[in-house]
Length: 486
Image 1 (cartoon, rainbow, N blue to C red):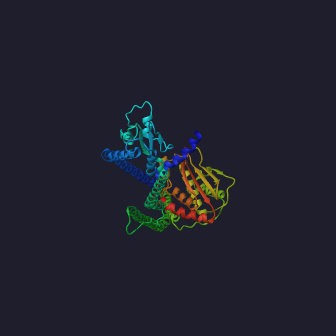
Image 2: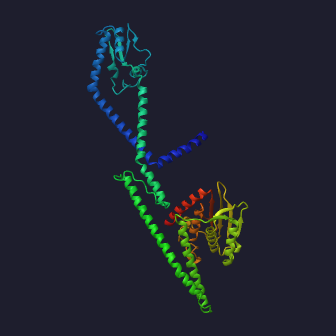
Image 3: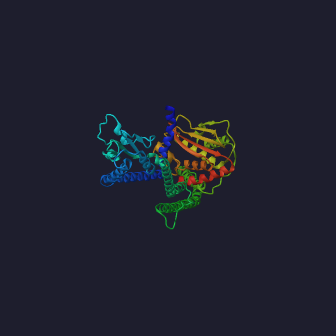
């Protein structure tokens, strides 16, 4: 019993979920319930009307007809004639039962007796004759007595209605066909909802090239008007994003030349003890501004639709060691990074410049927020299991971490959580965003989680065949634009 219940539960749960999530099924069920309620109301009303008019109209006619049949059988009230009774049963779909001192005969001995007669023959009957139907005098309608003591009972020959099961089957089949047609019509009627949902997903991913199809654009219905409105909204959002990107690129390009001149003029300042501190502080600020502009330009290149990666065979372990050595030149704490390298690392076609940017941002972010912790920053590099080839970087610090409700926003541009990871620690909120774009451009992903203590950032770079890589790069650009818009 428990195993059968266990096997039925998933199916029942799937059916309930499908009903809960499907507007089409719910509308069809509402239509069926409405049709059933209307049919029940109609049939109940007809039955009530028939019962009200029964005594005044149909009952006298039936009594007169039964009297005529009884006279035909008994030849005017005498002894019943079996020949006359047989002739009547052959002509009409009725049964005749004759009981008495001389004649005892049933026209259809294999047919079950009428319900009213079975009720009458029950022993210890406590009601007063209302056993069948709504008429308490039903037996008096279909039963007659002759002068010599014979009783003639009439009934309906149910064998004459042997086509009833077939008609019931046809009726059920017709109901099923009508239900199926209703479902197909509702499904066709609500098909624009599927197109609207798919279009909304495309717009959310940053793909605005394919609008939502509008059925009967010259005379659209409510769903068509909704699809046209969403298409207009998508075009407006696309134009706004393109204008924003163009403005950002223009500003970044225009700022590079003044920053270069300002840095050159600053380096030409005399290195006197009075000016040297201000000179170094100005150089640091100019370097930070130059890095911000470079990050902005790089993010726009990676988020663009037609970006190109310069792939070349790369040893991930050697690349990681080079980045750590480079960081150690400016940040002594990088020498203490706990590096964990797997032994089965493959050589992969990667864009070395972008992957170096990814690793540098991840390690620089971890070193910045790991300051003051007794545990070093950890970097785990392992190969991906499954189809294709790939690697996984897992960088963890032991800092204050981030609230769980802000983890999903860490990879968005210019986002900074309101915790100990504040503006005073440096950075402008583009590091993890760039890492996410680089990972997506390589067909991978970026995930952030709290390691308690600290923060763990896991980046996967997946590499398949050439066609797979091309498709992954195209999808990465669309996803990155959707992330930037959010």
